[in-house]
Every structure is written in C-alpha cells, then in structure tokens.
Image (cartoon, rainbow, N blue to C red; front, top):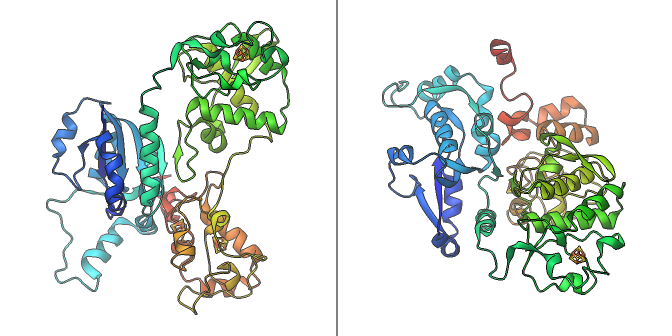
Length: 463
Ligand code: SF4
Ligand code: SF4
Ligand code: SF4
C-alpha cells in the first residue's frame, strides 16, 4: 500500500522541493510507492484538507524552510500533529539556513530595510493587510517540535533525497516470504544440540533472529548476524547470549565491529552519511549519547547496566540491544563515521597551511590543490560529508558549509574560527580587514542553531 506523505513549505525559497523535482525520471521508481496527500507547491491541495486529516494519519511529513511568520509556526505544529515521522528537509529546516542571518537584526529594522529603504522600492509602505504576522526572530523547526530526520543541504542533492526516501520505503517493505517471525534461527540450526556457537563463546544472534534464511552462517560455522531481524519470541539460548554479553568486559576491535555489524543489519540502519535519522540507534549513540537513559537488569552474572530501548516489543531482545549499545557507548572500538567534506574532497592537501588570505573573487583557484593552501576560506573541515563535493570538485568553489556541521561539532562557525586563526600566519587585525562579513562567512547556514543564535544584545531583553 502506498505510504502517505505530506510536504510543507515554511518561509523558504522552494529550492529543496525543486531539487526533489529535478529527479525527473528518477522519481518514477518511488512515486508509485507514495500517496501525496499535501504538497501545495506542486499540487492544488487546500490547507483545510490537511487540517481535516486524522492526527498521526500521515506517515511522513517533509518540512522545508524556517519559522519566520506566525503561519510558519502554526504549520510546523500542524505537521507534527498529523505526521508520524517528521523530516527537516534542507538546511533552512535543519539549521536556519541563509535567511537565518536575519537574526543579526531586529524585526523592525528588517521591515524598514526591505519595504522602506531598499533601492528597488517604488512605494515605501510596510504591508499590513493579508500578510501573516512576523515573528521577532527566526526559530528552527527543531526548537518547536520533535524532528525525526535531518536531511540538510542548500538544497539537499537530488541523489540524497531519493536515497533517503528509498531507505525509508525499504523499512516499510514487506518481509521475504520465507521469513517466520514466530520461530528463531536456532530452531532449525543443526548446531543446536552439541555444537552451539554461543557455548563456545561466540556471539551468535540466532536466538533473537527470525527464521527463514537458508542458515548459511551457522551451518558454515559462522555466527548468525541477525539479517532476518527480530523474532517475536526468544529461543532457549537467548539467556545464554545475554550471559555471554555480560561476561565479555572490554571488547576488542573485531568484537566491536561484529556488534556494530549485527546492530546495523538487525535494526535495518541507514548508513547514509548525509542524513541524521534519530531512529538509527548507532547514529544516535554517536551523536547524542546523552539522549539514552540507563537502567539496571539482573542476569545470572549479577546486575548489569544497559541503555533503555523499546524497539521490538520483547523485553529480553530490547535488553540485549540495550546492553550492546551500552558496551559500544563507552568503548574506543565504537567507530562511527563523522566524516567531513574534506574527507571526500578530491583536491590534493599537503599541509593545510596558508600564507595569504584571499577573497573568493581574487584570482582564479586551481582545480587540484586544497583551497586553504591557495589562501581561500573553505568550510570543508567543519561541514558534514555527503553532498558529493559538488562545489569543490565540479564548480571550483570553496565549500560554504551548507550541509552543516557533523553532530560532534556543536558550533561550526566557532570551531572553524578557532582552527583558522590558530594556523593563520597573519595578524588578527589583518584577518579582520580581509574578512568583511565574518558572520555571513562562518555562519552562513547555521546562525540560528549556533551557540549565540542571534544578535547578542537581544539576549538581555528576553533573558
Ligand atoms: S545460537 Fe547460533 S549456533 Fe547456537 S543454535 Fe542458535 S543459531 Fe545455532
Ligand atoms: S579545506 Fe576545502 S579544498 Fe581543502 S580538502 Fe577540505 S574541502 Fe577540500
Ligand atoms: S561543498 Fe559545501 S557548500 Fe557545496 S554542496 Fe557540499 S556542503 Fe554544500
């Protein structure tokens, strides 16, 4: 059955929706799987029709843009009410985007500039009829409602959008016919009686994995890695698996990798670099470990701390997953990619040191060496990988940071500035002379989600 989706446009330029439409024939593969119930930018749906829908009846809601007007605020809340999964679609929805730079000014100053002073104005008048009231500052969607998925980019590339939608559809795809969730892998395993791998100290996830595969792994002496996902009941050896896990203490690299491989297959995780999906427990563990609560369970090896998970409806399985995540969280063996644009850039880097600073329009950069080493400011080191380095390797332009920072960097602008100034050979005054608009350069896409968020003086007013 097609999945119901809604697209909402808040204050924005429509570029993210345009990027989706740019898929052209690429849309053919996914459109039959979607039932679009609201998409005013493309189809003539009425707002009333969205309001009339039952709460949580729409599976996925895409929100493009940011909250500038009161109408944006109400539409954001409406989408959360009507949709089960909310995707912040594009850098404006994820971080505030370029319009977020308006947080450097007060609302009245912005209106004055736009409607009274701008050189292109023919009739100086601030409109007050048939326009929604304007909020004092731009607020990010995530500050008003819970967001499940962040899909950044200005705009997100068409490939990224299609990959994200395809991944979400794959989560809803029907199970293979042979899969039987009422049985676990152990029930058909020839090693069960005398040769069980768990009894030999190997992490085999057969007791909690649905049966139906051709048992290639255990029959070949390799542990089950959970690719048929959760069974509804746990096999006899489930407790042995839990006990084995509580006894392993510190894990080595192969065990760490095995655990991550199991969780990725068993939970159907995305592995998509460009997208942060909070339902992807490995991403969440890497990026927001503090959002998990801990609990204590009792095992035959004594009390054991685990992370609290409610995923499968089976307490023992949830406890095993919670224990695996607990083990990984504090282990140096937890290797989660937090790659930056630099790591996917084709330009040659020698020592990333620069002796001069240039504005973008000065000279013509070469296509083969790092922008930094040529003197240009490039935000690749503090920007999340995933865009395909289109600016750097196709347009011969430095990265402006539109994919936002990887989640292990709290404030891309501050991080960049501290790195940049520490390696610059120039005096601070000289740097300040050349970089005329530091906020626009270092916080171009992320100001409302940065630490200071808006003009500093105004913090005093709203405490
Ligand atoms: S735990 Fe693994 S090896 Fe043991 S019976 Fe189950 S599937 Fe077979
Ligand atoms: S700083 Fe920019 S040009 Fe240099 S490697 Fe990183 S992304 Fe590429
Ligand atoms: S290179 Fe930087 S600015 Fe360009 S698309 Fe990628 S993240 Fe955005």
